[in-house]
Length: 531
Image (cartoon, rainbow, N blue to C red; front, side, top):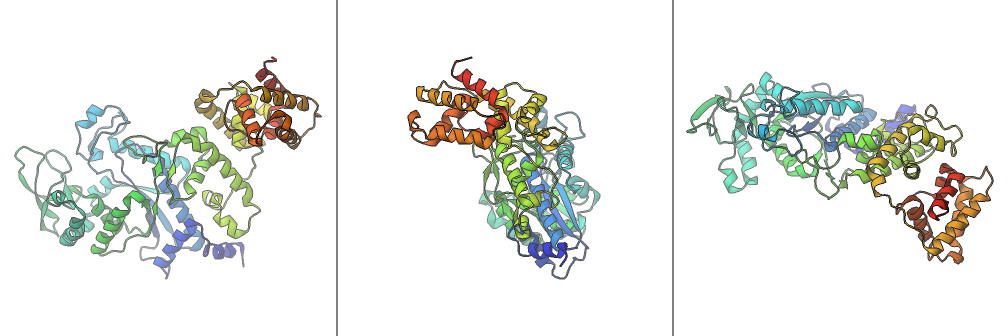
């Protein structure tokens, strides 16, 4: 078997979730490519607010499934990032300027609402541009599709006629899911008022399905006049669940994942898709990212982390790692998760080369890099870097490199470019989040005695002492009953709180070797009031 055959055979039985999802598509088309000649993946975005990491997460995970499918099949694929930008503006987001101006355009399609930032044709155009920059920065292979452009170009017209033909069946699906008062006003069709430009939520009567004609009362104008109007070519859009189903039909979508909060929407849209004469796409429901308070991340609230924030304090691979792990488990997304994600990414990346194929296919880094891992190692952890920067204070990148040379003989930006990038992230993270929380405390008498012993032992070490040599000294002092530590962890906690100003910290042997024995002794002297 060739390497490619070996990988494909392993992928066919891999329990990694992207491969499990990709195998659904093999079963969907057991005879190979569908009539359209490709498999279509879709992700959806509502540009009623700025895109956030949840949006990135969906495109990333879908891309991972797409890549997994490529390992299993030679059938071509496409990925569409669909923007529902014809939706009416329902409320003013909390995290954008000029809210009063936006309030004047409530109800209008997002592509008809002025840009509160004043730099694009509309609010939707602004958010769409942000989304595309958001996705382009990571290098996603996708095609952007605007709902407004497709509706107005007539690309959805035949599917809209089918909605009118199957109007009664769609109502039979949707009405039992609604409250009684909502049933009285519900319509799958949302006509756009020719006079006010508002997307109307009013009952409609189908007049002529083939011509696309409906009758409704335009409640957005004085007197609420009765209007007969076509729904084709951008004169109307569809209610959310019906719109989703129509899009699956019109575009021929084969795979789309969605958040757990949309399980009911997936169920109803799938029924509507079948009523329209098509097969719903494959997919699965992932759990939502939560903010630090455990609340769902929202575009309109702007809570949680932005992509820019994460990429300020950690590399994009660490974000991809965090998104890959346990997609069906709710996870908090806040600044505190970044350092661990960085170090765990590197841990899994370091393990990859020595793993069997089956283990590699289940390794997150395989899916982050589509099996093509970059070269390079990381001689220190991100956590250790943060501790180093913490004791250095207002350090520069060059100063950090000078300390690293105490620990790594060939330490330089040229030899370790990814470490150089991490230094920048560590400096930013320390400046904005660690430094304001650091507070060294004075040692208790027994702790001071132990620190003095550590200083004496460090002073007796030879110049070529290793991190392990230092660690052995630290352990021996902590276990020495003369210093009165009930448990070894009490000694470590004392080291972290007195030397680093934190409750948690690194392996001290590694930290002292990195910071330098002389510098570490000066730090101990300062804590003991000897300098």
